[in-house]
Amino acid sequence: MADKILEISNVYKRFGDNNVLNGVNISVEKGEVIVILGPSGSGKTTMLRTINFLDPADAGEISIDGMTVKCQEKNKKKVRALRQKTAMVFQQYNLFRNRTAIENVMEGLTVVKKVPKAEAKKIAEAALAQVGLSDKAALYPAQLSGGQQQRVSIARALVMKPEVILFDEPTSALDPELVGEVLKCIRDVAKTGITMIIVTHEIAFAKEAATRVIFMDGGVVVENGTPDEVINHPKTERAQVFLERINHPQAV
Image 1 (cartoon, rainbow, N blue to C red):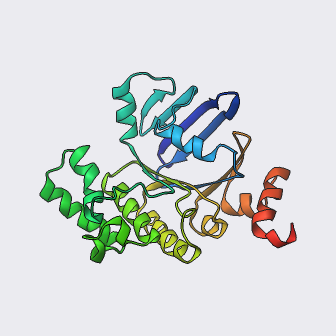
Image 2 (image 1 turned 180 degrees about the horizontal axis):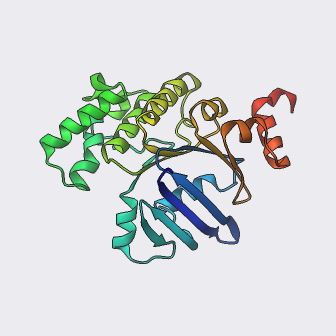
């Protein structure tokens, strides 16, 4: 039986009068690639950000690799320890503009993990090679395409050796011709066996790379199954309508 690496239990989150998450329960096994689908406002990104306490939930529990923290937890040390079991790849890359690609990748190693600079540089060089950017190590973000910047951010996540990498719509800010290179990079990283949770609208990618697809709507998990079950044979009307719009926009 596979090892459970992440458990999201009965998570609730509201912003003002808006209930964004209404009791989310998700269990993830080690090595799974989970793709989260759903319409805008369904709670996908908020759910992702509650996992690493970027947006702490109002109620519920998050467990990663055997460590459980209540979402209302005020213990900063425990929250920090849980957060270090994850790494996040953002829509907008979130790179330091005044640092080169390799310096961006090294940052977490030297600042958070206190890895000596020479060792951190070797680890960062290997990660940039893994995402196909060895020749871009000395360039600044402004000298890189959007796709290259996103691949740097993936390398930055990899060097931290997290239990889970969280991807928040990693291709949504990219020009269409750059999407493929980032999705290929994510697919290649997935083959290494690292656990991933990916919020995306890339249905073809979900079909090919996901071990499981979760469809969210109204702040809850509506469908949860294999890519074939959820994408090709959705059980709920809400998922059927959403997927029809994405798969056949001209027919709607």
